[in-house]
Image 1 (cartoon, rainbow, N blue to C red):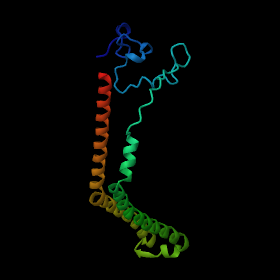
Image 2 (tube, rainbow, N blue to C red):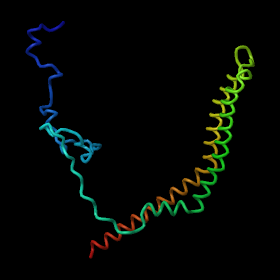
Image 3 (cartoon, rainbow, N blue to C red):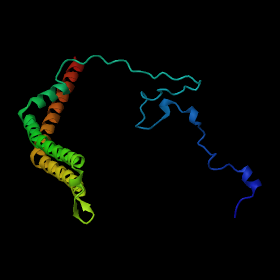
Image 4 (spheres, rainbow, N blue to C red):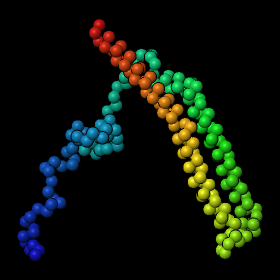
Length: 188
């Protein structure tokens, strides 16, 4: 059933088997992992002699020519009437919702602190006013979350999606113009 000690001593265990390469011999270029970042590797690692390696830092790229960039498109979208309408709809729901919920929460805390006899008043059996109000806090949290998701779905998501598509369309056009300009320069 088992092996005798003298037989087991001569055999190499599966733990001792390896592919022939030692882990210390792996170099940065040897890794075929697509998520491996060669620039980020080496930070604080030892180079084999016991001293930390200094990572290679790429040379800074030439400054890009001034053209329409993503930041300009973002600013243009932000200044648009459609974006302002989405933000207005957001604020019309969120500000009153937060104010109402915060008032309700502070009222619960103040009442629990200032009027403990009111909060200790029994409602039914061992359930008192504090327990009912505390559970109501949870209920209003879920209610507010549902109302927010519904409001976003019905009044903001479509307009926000249209804005997103408009932005990506502008970005795509910008990239196409840049590629055409590079092709024209390459032909010269």
